[in-house]
Image (tube, rainbow, N blue to C red):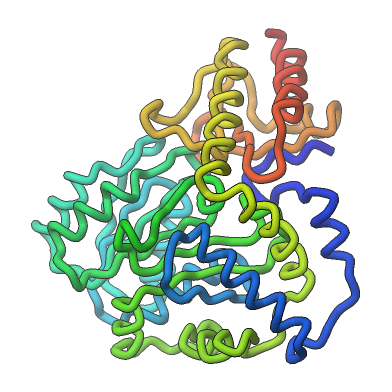
Length: 358
């Protein structure tokens, strides 16, 4: 099977072997050594000296933790939404009783820093701004550095910047400290080449100050509790040990390569995917200035059904691509993050040529 969805992503053989190890005591020294290494190695890719908490949950749990630990009911929040996962961040904030203003960016486009700054000046002040680094539903990557700079200039030093980097971090650089963002969330099943089941969250000093003020209910996703245990390389509740085995193994190789080299590799593989689709005459959905290097969305020829093409890929070729999350458009999405090669994409191109008669 050639799994080409935007997560969960395929696992390298050595990660599969690591995941299959026998369980260990999550209060014992073996676990503590592994957890300490994972935490330290993650900071290399968050590009931060801030605290990093590891939660047993999907990435969505990390997004919920970002809201529940830094805000209070009634707080004004600006949610910059450019697709279904930006919408999800806004929905979580609304579920916790914050007053959410949505700045809706047209599907396929990235957020304009000037537009975000204008929204803050005209409709603020806001306690927090919610951003998506990489929107897999439309295959668009935001310029988080420029957005964060604009938010600081318009909103001041105390506005929180909360970033969903679930499908970007590990493949697309995000410099949490240099860009002065407060909470960054990612998930193990994406560029990290590990199984689903872990959310990783970095928390700035500004965000910890907000934590002390927060009046949101929290228990399982209490980051203060997570940090207290993390300082002795443990977790408050039983962790996903198997997923940690996998993440520990994948990070060993990732740290050797480093963030810059991995970002460049994903830039090359993203360009390879886009060019392959263009060469067969397909057009791409996203704004060319903001193409994602972890997923590509391709428009199908007029009259072709995305559901039928995806079914033919699966049943005839063993290739699993993703459906569109853009209503009313016949678009398919091809994931290319983590454990992926040009040969994997060549299989997709060959199958699409046959299915579409190109």
